[in-house]
Length: 334
Image 1 (cartoon, rainbow, N blue to C red):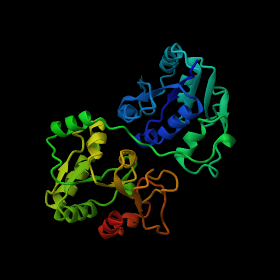
Image 2 (cartoon, helix red, strand yellow):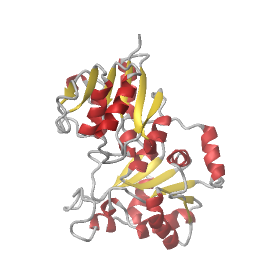
Image 3 (tube, helix red, strand yellow):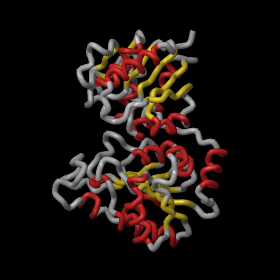
Image 4 (cartoon, rainbow, N blue to C red):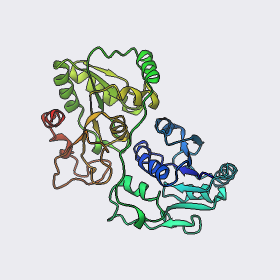
């Protein structure tokens, strides 16, 4: 009888992308297993493009919502589906409460918020041994960390041509000229966002080379993207807030090059196989790099970075301000 596994997914888009190598490893270790993922609506498009996933189940709880009684009720419903194992990827007590409510025999995850009484296959994370987030996830597919070989595969999404064509038609986009995509936002904060004027200068360069420039992001990114568009001389198509995540994934796959901040869409761009240049300011590629052989990292490695702050504590954001468009363009051409 094949093993049935439930995954309680992370909330952040980039983290969801990085779970695919773990799902692939589970299939290698347990041939013919079935894997269902319990994920919030905003991230489900990511899992829809992973062939390793059988069913996507709706996680109705938003960021920070406690709702303990409701979590217990949802967990009990999940438990009726007959799983052999649940793997809890978030480190919160809230996610572990859902897991214990399922009654599933094997409940796997890291200690996190002191979850000893909730998870019975509990792991202590050695951050030094596993600096990469993707490896931390993949290690949970194994019986223990010692059994993990220290190597994860790369995320790789399956893009359906019909879905891609529908997204192009809906947003009146053409592929008659090559496409460069910019992901100008970063949910974490301004210390991770390359300057709009730098994006604009880069847009002008690629427009002169005969490229279209498409701007991707959420509604929160619209104003920054529009600033990029205006500074470039209106050379860009601003899609921020106009596409669903599913459409953004399929449209990013059309691009020959993606220039992006350290963000969820950076990981999406890597997973759809785009050539990309990832700009790093306050964060570091040592923990969550773009997982692709086609990716280049643009960073200055200043003494004050990475600081891992949302806003520059020194008020100048030199790690991004001094990172000139020429550096990104040169990296893209390598």
